[in-house]
Length: 425
Length: 118
Image (tube, rainbow over all chains, first blue to last red; front, top):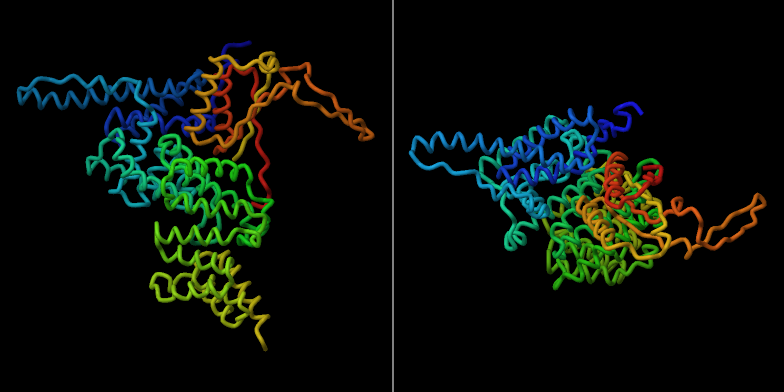
């Protein structure tokens, strides 16, 4: 064997994989060490650049994470020393004693989970806009590159890069420093984190505009972050429920699109194409959530509703009475017109379209629903089931004109056409 | 992307003796790491081949059932995990770590079929 032959030579893609796995931990630990995220990211980038240079000639070490942390920490200490030196100049002028860097924070034995959670709380910080939180979380906690994030959002890379730079600057300007999350802080900050993760997932699950119905990469990223969060905060019912909810919704992704990219609605989906591995994982996560909860929170209720569908062999044998009940609880825990609308659908299925329509009609007065294609689509469905085809067609057409999603519009127009053929001549 | 990562057996796994405490501890460490990375969606271990059987078919389609155990411990799948990752390289990277921790002599990383039409 010639020298180097046995070396595990690293490829670009291999480096990418190591970055994806190691960068969140590295950035989290460096942020704990340095206090601010912007500097930590810079140090992490530098460390990785060094690693690439070294690994392409010498091969990847057995423990790349350890190597990165060792190298990154050394750089961070240099940064702290330089910072202190700067500080010392002023200190000497002011004739005060010099402080040694706080060596306690250099100890490795901190819980990496706490470091990561502290990082998530920074990237989901309330001073940031939702768009900035999403981009920063995907990058720092998800380990995605700016290029990958831009591709997922169908946005130019420069836009995402700028968004991330601005977000980091905003954190620095507001002097948001790394803190180890205490119990109180956990419960106060977790909802914002879950919201960001669900936002990422939903961006993929229901592309709001344009031709693409589903962007599966973002769904995968959302679920992955959701899984990570369950390991960081394993005693929170809603964290497990969020994961279950995302996985249950994602289990239907394959069945939601036909061969030509057209949307297939729940009732028409081939349930054999639902992803049983994900459903299984989701049901376990939901079980954990149920064990941990006293009163079901909004994510658990939504997961339980999704689970009713996952268990049912068809739309007809679905437990709509239970779903209607869960929506009723939802309307107390987290009331919204959308919840009411879904309750109307469930009531229509459980107790007949007239009952559903009764509730749906009440929503006609709600301002936010008046321009929503959803209300029109639901009313169209209920009216069609009542045999009121002319009105149903009008509602479907209205829904088609209101939706921003191209594939959804095609489905709604098809429903309108179906009603037209049933109208009395 | 989904990958199935399969590990192969040895005399130890085939003997049916419970894994050593060190092994359990190492496996636990890997499982915790994979879970923390958010990539593991399923993992199962297989019982020794003595608990199973092999079915061979001759060219005419006639089945012959042979009960375990089978001789080649190192050719027998001892356990598998399903990973949801962003690339094959990532699946490989996770599997390498697993193999290092578990002291596995071989790990197969196989891409799972994606349903066409997506």
